[in-house]
Image 1 (tube, rainbow, N blue to C red):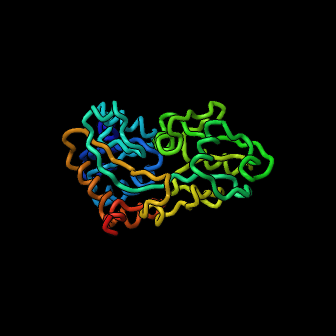
Image 2: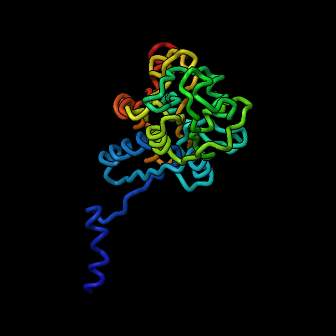
Image 3: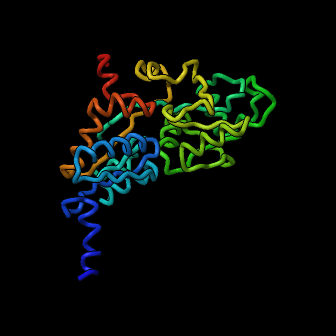
Amino acid sequence: MVALLLLATPLTGCFGTGMPREEVIVSGSTTLLPIAEVAGEMFAEEHPGVSILVSGMGSSAGIESVTNGSSDIGTSSRELKESEKETGLDDTPVAYDAIAVIVHPDNPVTGLSTMDVRAIFSGVITNWSQLGGPDMEIGLVNRDEASGTREAFAKIIMDDARFDIGAVILPGTGQVRAVVSEVPGAIGYISLGFVTDEVRAVAIDGVEPSEEAVISGTYPVQRVLHFFTRGEVGQSAAEYIEYVLSPAVQETIVRDAGFIPITAKEALGD
């Protein structure tokens, strides 16, 4: 009898009613992680019977997980590839973002052209002196192939050029920022929402990355952040998506994370 009571205690102690919580599984983009996590915590507080389980595995992994049914929502910081469009996923845009090209704060180079960035990341330009900077080797920091940020960067910047295979490859935004902040000659790219004083974002084609530049369309390296679902969505998952699109999240969590609400352009009549 004592053993049975001990086994029963966690069920009633954790949830009060003795009923298990419903789980909504959200996985994918590390860029979207702060929005999905904080919104999930807020949603769960308002819906005591629901847990939002969020993980950042990369956009490709998130798309794969929602495609095969292991996740309810796949988050992505890139568009679907042609092969992925055949899976019948439904797309809910949740925010706008700019991809910032970052350098060490002491690097005197403040601006690059799109062609400069392509030449750097393809290994054609290898020294900052070729760009008006000091005689210092360029240290390339790239993302892994599962990264939606890498996919978007390649599509917007690289065109048909291949990434230099000599670049340091890192799995997450935070790692890229950390390395660039410590290596004077390093260059990388991260979501604008993750730029801190540890690094400096350079202007691209004469335009600084900012919300105004993204809304106006003048900053060239920008993208849409997505929630993907497949087929009929459960009620709690659908309510969570609606919650992420609500002003309570868009005007607070999305902005606090450094992203731009999905309604921003519509509000300007675009």
